[in-house]
Length: 304
Image (cartoon, rainbow, N blue to C red; front, side, top):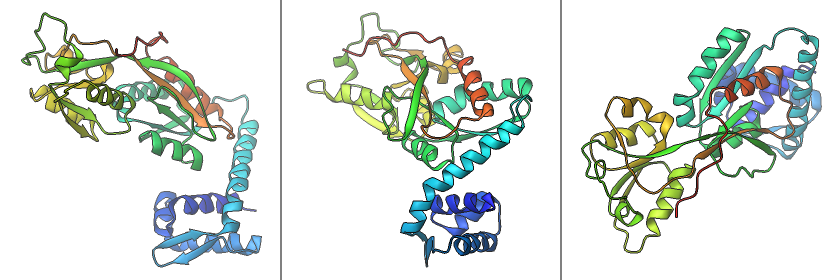
């Protein structure tokens, strides 16, 4: 069996669209159609129902999915065994949130280009839910998650590092120069610009603020960390971000740290599909990642 057919099958099963599958695979749509028909003929069963708005996988197709993933995984192991003894090489797709894509991963890619030029790293900016789905479907090889706990069926994760968090405001904001400690009651009267819902550290802060009796703060959520940071630099309110995303603005005096309640560092977890083999190239990327994060210090105390 031509394993390219299985790869096309899995891509169509994930996208549910011949057009989307063709775009992702860099094939003509007609080629995707021909390959799926060839696979159906070889297996003697219908794998998809063709609908006006896409392709709906059949029961037989769902049964094939896990087996197809296992075959492609075995093929990758075979290729790696043949190439054993040489330097790690191949394409590794890493999923991560905006924070890590902008602050940490460029340095990792630059280092790998020097030490392992045969490894090609592709970044996929994704949130936690999309990262988990990408690992399950095979679209991602590994993912970096800013989460305290990673408990998803079929996903294995291990702590990689911790990212320190800082409460930020503009240098001219009243809380920037305040000598008395800033309390939760003080913060519950402020305006906040936070990363979108689903961001673990932003969600925890929002919940803590909302729990303050008589809270009167205003919360605005953005899908972009840059948007939240720009609003704060303009003096419109406060935000909570990993320090790595604010280093330049702090050094240039565009942002200031609020001396408020302590916030725990947010864990960085490296996640993978539990049953899928980790290629030498992917393992090399993980090893390089560990060298580009702060030391694995214990997380700080949770906010009181």
